[in-house]
Length: 230
Ligand SMILES: NC(=O)c1ccc[n+]([C@@H]2O[C@H](COP(=O)([O-])OP(=O)(O)OC[C@H]3O[C@@H](n4cnc5c(N)ncnc54)[C@H](OP(=O)(O)O)[C@@H]3O)[C@@H](O)[C@H]2O)c1
Image (tube, rainbow, N blue to C red; front, side):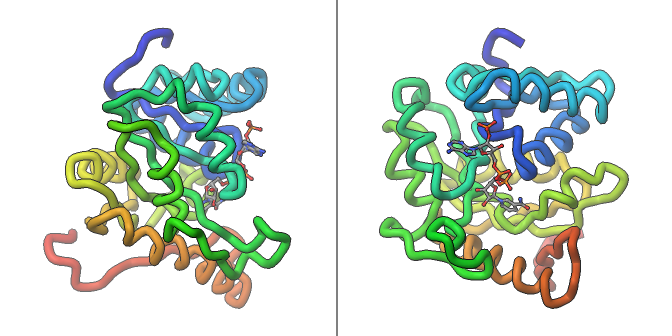
């Protein structure tokens, strides 16, 4: 893949646990995937890993800037504390019409504290921090914070988790459609981007639940009585 494809999905930091999990799932659903990294060789190795698990996958590995240029949808999959640095490096690369998906959680590990708590973010949430940093015309949507990487990477099983998707209506609907590509993920309309602050906090709660109930693979949330849900 050397030119931008409208259905391609770029995953920056796709070499890490969560990004790789999403790459595997989207590749298996038949979508072109671009794995981004600070180092091209790490991206290439991650792309090889996807190809091994999903024969025939349309996947490439590139540095983050080159990966960003190849897709309308760009998922930011770096630890919260590296959100601003990563986006500032891309300010001349991101272009109007693209959608950036914020999956980051402001875990207190960012300040050397525990993962069962979050830190306050001036803008209200990681997603709103992302919105404050992208160029005009780039939409930001919040999603996937409550999905565990182990579940994403385990292609033998459905993921079984609701995904609250927040942001402006049109880009939000595009990201909700993305969730439907992954068996067991159910997209829930989370309204405006500011609601990301609730969803991000639930991840810290889930991390504590995983410890107390000894679920190393990670739990997920399901909403009950959701109209129209299967
Ligand atoms: N893991 C989960 O179960 C989970 C669940 C829900 C949400 N999330 C969220 O998903 C995001 C990624 O999580 P993860 O567990 O995959 O994280 P991770 O493995 O710790 O890191 C992901 C990638 O971030 C890049 N990175 C590391 N340090 C960086 C720096 N200083 N500057 C820029 N990039 C850097 C690295 O890619 P390169 O070295 O290749 O550049 C790394 O592979 C986080 O925001 C997290 O809150 C994770």
